[in-house]
Image (cartoon, rainbow, N blue to C red; front, side, top):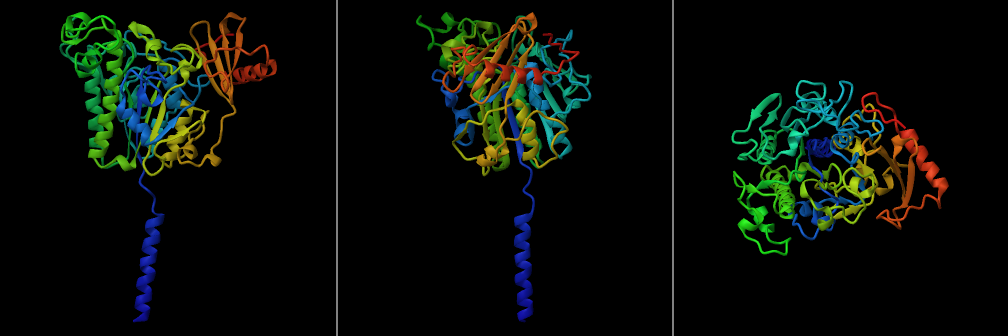
Length: 472
């Protein structure tokens, strides 16, 4: 009798230990990427004129990165850096090279994305929004780069229109009735949002990676005449307002007029925030929130096109520069991660990271084999509060091929920006971000040895590309 009792106890202990040692199910991953949203456009990063309660909630329930950077300062190369885990001196796409009549230069067959690694590791993968890295039928199409499902704008030029003539559902062209040069009936971001929410519902029983590269709040400044627009309608101008004065409902189809661009921009950010709220609510509804990592960021700094006024909104968060600059305002972006049970609520980190760190981090989160090559490092230790185990970058590197060619390096507190690279007579500026985060005082003449060291990092980091040459 005693032997039977002992056997029962042993079996019970083994069962408990087995539970303790059984692998935790792979977390779902949701990555929401805004388009041209500035570091300072969110309440949790200091925005005072636009309300972003849902993204602020994400920060309160997760970790806010204060010194995180985009891949570069415009769309396509920044997204290439994100997906390939390589900075712009190495990543395949390094500029917005257009293909007529639709699409951009495609990622090559040989390019590996982290979506492919997640897909190979058992994740269902979906991208909903803006692609810009290869037209349907090319080597860079979403279905060739790790996504089971794509719905949205394949082409960046098309994504400048919130009432486009068509979207893409994988390789099927979906015409949007009622949209054209005059009439604007079907608001594309709403359709894309609905498909993204449905993707989570359809894949609730399996680990999934949901990539949401939204077009909000990229110019053009346009959107529905709805509660978001009307809420801001009279706040930003001294003149009295009514529907006729600032154009609400004045345009065919009932969309918000650009006659009040500040109200339109604010409404676009608030609508983006509401979409984030819908994602969080859907995760709660499906019972998936506790096993889902949610990431929010932006592809580069704030734009000035289409009547946008980043200075009025302090969209750059007080930093110098805008989209197309390699100063902090052009490349430092909001970055927030919520992961219940793994990331401490309401925490912040000064880890200096960038888009090319996301590949090794998400692969580590999923428990998968690391990529063949990456310029990044996993910041999983920082997420989990294991700061003593967190590796640090000796430097971060960016390049930008427009405007005469620009390069930048950050190493610790030092930031070097090299301008007019393609002129043959480049100029290097140096800033101490610790004492001068606004990059207002060039100290290159005072610290020539530091300038030389950071220029050496630039030279070491750039590998010439036949497709995107960067002559110096």
